[in-house]
Amino acid sequence: MAQNEKLAELSSAGVAVWLDDLSRDRIRSGNLQSLVDEHSVVGVTTNPTIFAAAISGSESYDDQLHALAVRQVSVEEALRTITAADVRDACDLLRPVADRQPGDGRVSLEVAPGLAHDTDATAAEAAHLWWLVDRPNLFIKIPATEAGLPAIHTSIAKGISVNVTLIFSPDRYRKVMDAYLSGLEDRLAEDPDADLSGIASVASFFVSRVDTEIDKRLDSSDADPALVKGLKSRAGVANAQLAYQAYEEVFSSDRWKALEAKGARPQRPLWASTGVKNPELPDTLYISELIAPGTVNTMPEKTLMAYADHGEPGTPVQKAYDEATEVMQAVADAGVDLDDVFRVLEDEGVQKFVDSWDDLTDSVRTQLEDKK
Image (cartoon, rainbow, N blue to C red; front, side):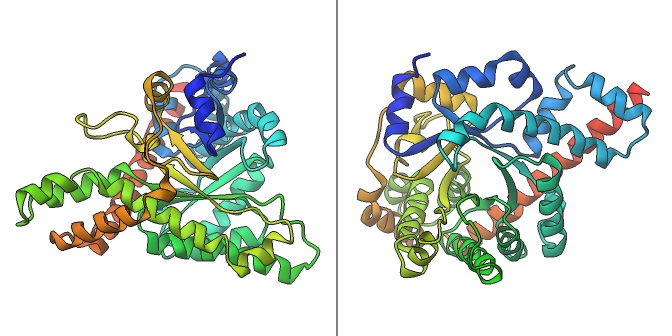
């Protein structure tokens, strides 16, 4: 079937279109397959919030919940069994994409967010989930916290493909890229003949949340109102553009070229949190202004359909570095503490996923009781 013209154009510019949502209903109804066939979707991301909405809002899980209930499994085992089943089925659906486009056709499953500050537990759960789903086109999502960085390194060294999530600053992003390269180097140190081509990774750089937090601080700053007005809702894109500049630097280095010669694949930047929070902004802003080769844009379905309907390419990322630098410097000059912004966003991001995980756990617990 013919692909949507605007999304096909986006793909041809080097942007992999991924869907930021998954449910059993999407898979069984054929909706996910139709998005692959008609809207250029070549990957799927999930998180605890997505699964909480999927499981609590559908009868498609009833039979499995009943079987788990009569077996008297724990809530934690039931939760992982259910989510792993959906991710495994989505991996199977997307396997043809992965076979023709290595690196895409991927589906992400997140480690329990409560482990975000525990390196060993994160690495252990990443290995368990990799074994549990048992599909080569899986991504294990690990947060880019300070404790998460060595877990990313360890997972990559073990041959586990990783989606690094909750990245907000270019500085932290550079540490994420270092963890990826170090993991590949350790794998080669252990086995000089290791095949690195099967290991993939993306680095999920969050966008709209940066605008939300910085705009709030600009509104309460003592800076000139005209300056504030000119800076509002520009930092999210500028911050991501500078992240891509860092990506280009790292993945053109001699260090990277040595790994590439052994079959390694670049860790692609993934633009996350791309649904516009401010209704006054164009609903395709975080797609149009973040077009660059070798990137992924994971979109809520509403944003995906908006771009399919009326999206237009903006300024290519590689032509925006100087302006992006000026925007972020002006934000700092207006009194916004960027280091504090990124710290708060990371803490809030972890907590939001913990809260969603708790909601998901409570929902599964209640349904297990009802299905006995």
